[in-house]
Image (cartoon, rainbow, N blue to C red; front, side, top):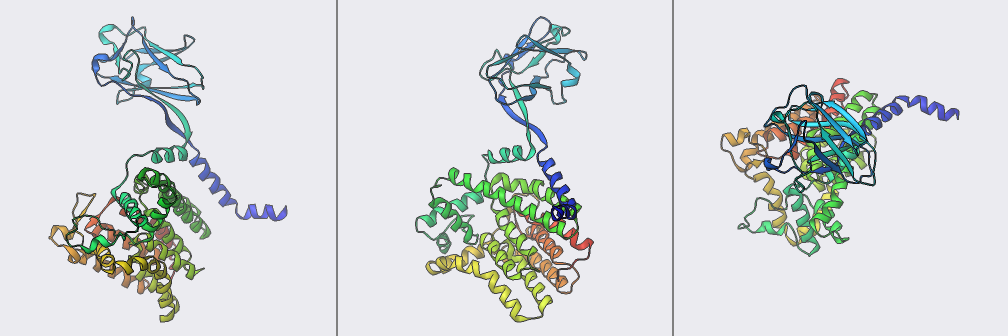
Length: 466
């Protein structure tokens, strides 16, 4: 018992932090329980005034309803002192001044508690001080014009609602469809890199990722998830899980470095920033590769060989880690001043990518080479309308990457000179990639996010891993 109490005392701040994280993630937020869409034809709007009531029916529901929202048509302005009465099943009556429940965007939101019910609930909305000339006009049900359209909300934990909202997203990015398609090609015995052999192949998208992502895609399809939607139902939770692993790893790492508050900041920042949520929403594989990279970097000092393999796995999934390999080799050299150690690090980082590439290199070495080189020659494109410097001066192909490569070289030199730490240098590398690569998509921004709290810790405490 004494050892147990001593352990609690020693880790009391961690326990409090985990309790705080749990409280935040369990914080109740509104979630749509029932949604009755409005009829767009205003001719069917329901009127509410002294002599006319409106009816709203709620079907049987197993969860408590906490808020009811109704859309108002703002063609007529009711009196400022208007009062609405909500009568539930001809029994409970709630009176609310319209000014208290009407939002600036003309939505009436009624906060109340309606317990679960196995029968239909009827709510009559009336008023005793709105004249017909200033009748309150609310949108009718799309299917039953005699009823009111509405949204019924319940309370649910924040993390549950976030996962539910993203998991039900119909939107996906084209990249993830290509990962599925290339995996399907592998299950049919085809080499996804072979199509790059043809100079007449007219596509904006070759199989440009390193092969582990395609091999994993094929494995998921092999076990029965062959259609894109079925396959995505497996991949999306995996993306969520690796996103959470990345955030949690940052928290634990910083806690172990006596930076609890910064760890909490890093956890929530990485978990909920908009670019990370975008990756979850469209089910990109970036967080899978990123989790292995971040874990590998955190283990560099304690278990370097394992760290190198983890970085190699990240590289095998998506080659964003290729830009930080020079930083790893610089770190190894500064630590050991040994070509043997640096060579061993390079071999261990490369071993998984090489093994994954072997079957594809055997059948189409030219296709593999051209597919990978495509990323270095690809025409400027992406999700942002703001052009980079290379686009403004009409550079194309490898020439368009000169500015990016030069700036990265400055970072490599500064790291070698021990002017900046490893995490800070990696943040710089990814920010340079985002700012100067002629091809830029939303998910690229996510790669810089985990290194912001790590670089802040490193710079604030002058903790140079080298």
